[in-house]
Length: 144
Image (cartoon, rainbow, N blue to C red; front, side):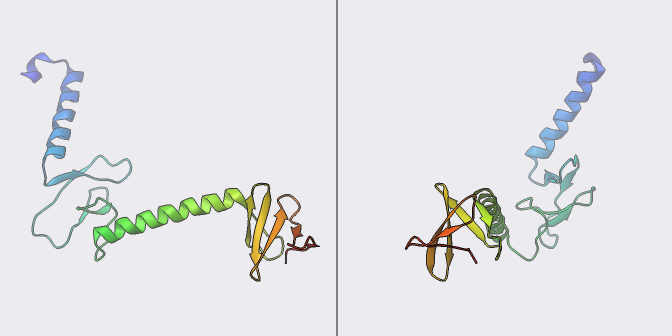
């Protein structure tokens, strides 16, 4: 009916929606998760493991749609991704809120207008712009 009554442009949209609906409703098919890929993959039951390959040559896990990770289970991969994401956020924070010591190159934290450096189990406060360390007794020293 659609092919007889609808304009050519609408027929194309309808066939795309029909294909998308079939892929997303079928438990044995999934879209390839590779960026920009428009291929779908069918999982053949009884095949060894959950690693599948798309026509674009992207290999991924059928269960979690992450990159292929056999023999590691999906839960471990999810934890690894979360850990890496958290470490990335930590690194962003360190880059935004610290400066490297001019001598030893360790990051020095900026804290309310002052930087703090823990070295030899003593806390020393440093002015953010000068990298001049003020000891607890008021003496000014070089950071390293």
